[in-house]
Length: 167
Image (tube, rainbow, N blue to C red; front, side, top):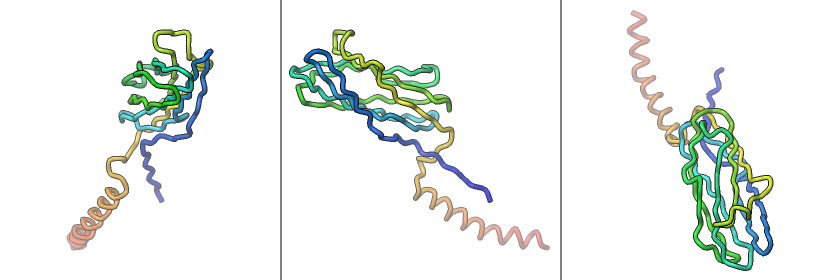
């Protein structure tokens, strides 16, 4: 009996929370620890950042890949608007894997205009795993429709072919 496997693009939202502090400047950064995607398909990365400091800040976030030739990152260099104390914002970036090889995204946080602040050591890392096969565009209802159509065709035309071949 053959088994048919389908892989869906999804993000494992095991949230990593990184608290970074420098003097009176503090930030809380939440992001997934692992992303599982399909080769060639866009996947949204949505890290959240919260200003825990006493003053309003602007942040500069950089996203890079361990193998940059195997993954495309849109919006890899993000400059935020001013984030008030105790307020948070969501940032958006898209990734597209070009191979099945695993990749690691590295995220660094800086205080905007000052590259010496907010670089967590070690930097934030996100494992990106990609699969070659996917069926996200059909979903479960689409798969059921395909099975119904295939059954109708099999029983409609299969009987004719069996009768024609038995003659």
